[in-house]
Amino acid sequence: MPKITVAEHAGACYGVQRALDLVQKVAREATGAIHTLGPLIHNPQVVEDLAAEGVTVVSDVPAEPGSTLVLRTHGVVPQVEKTARERGLHVVDATCPYVKRVHHAAERLQQEGYQVLVVGEAGHPEVEAILGHAPGARAVSCAAELDGIELGRRVGVVVQTTQAKPTLDAVVSELMARAGEVCVINTICEATSERQKAARELAASSDVMVVIGGRNSANTTRLATICSASCERTHHIETCDELEASWFAGAEHVGVTAGASTPTAQIDELVASIESLCTSLA
Ligand code: F3S
Image (cartoon, rainbow, N blue to C red; front, side):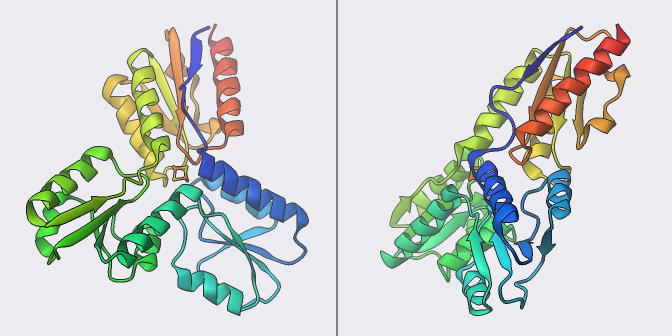
């Protein structure tokens, strides 16, 4: 039987766990319909489980007075929350507090007269929400994109929570050469880098790595890529049904990790399933 190790940092981050707890509490207590504005997290199994509890996904604010609308961890532009309240919906704000911190930082920089830049992926819901809190702000995903922006003298910078620090450093270093004053509020959340570092270290000492999480989850896919770089036998799965006994043949050490949108229960189930498959091989 191989040794199975779960990465030191793996699975649901603080914001995702908080959102899940909030929506489960609402599902137990609310009397009317419950909707999440977009999938609560990038994890199809969790979204299916929530649907079984009566929580449905909507793509726009519904006109259903008395129903409950859960805002997901990425946050929303202020207008969305305003519209929901005007339509008589109960709003449950599951925006991650670390994402809220970015909204506040962008607002503050703008109030102080800075031209606000958001280092992040344009079009990503989190970035769109940040831009909505600082109208006129621009998103840049890399230093080269600064070429398309007319910069003022005073530039304020905030960052999408899941960005890599070297990307921020490159943008800031370029800004220092171009703007008179640069004020940077580093709003990167450590949950992502902690998971990546732990996955990299575990993969280096594992014969097989299994990464569990949604294929539509960017941070889970990134973990799988990182693990593949040092462990050729890396597998990215969404559910334990996808496991194959042959993956573990001859392995002495199996590593397990999961993206920030994977609840702990799914990691526990994965470990139990690997144990059972390895027992069948013995
Ligand atoms: Fe929040 Fe960081 Fe998770 S911003 S949603 S705790 S990755």
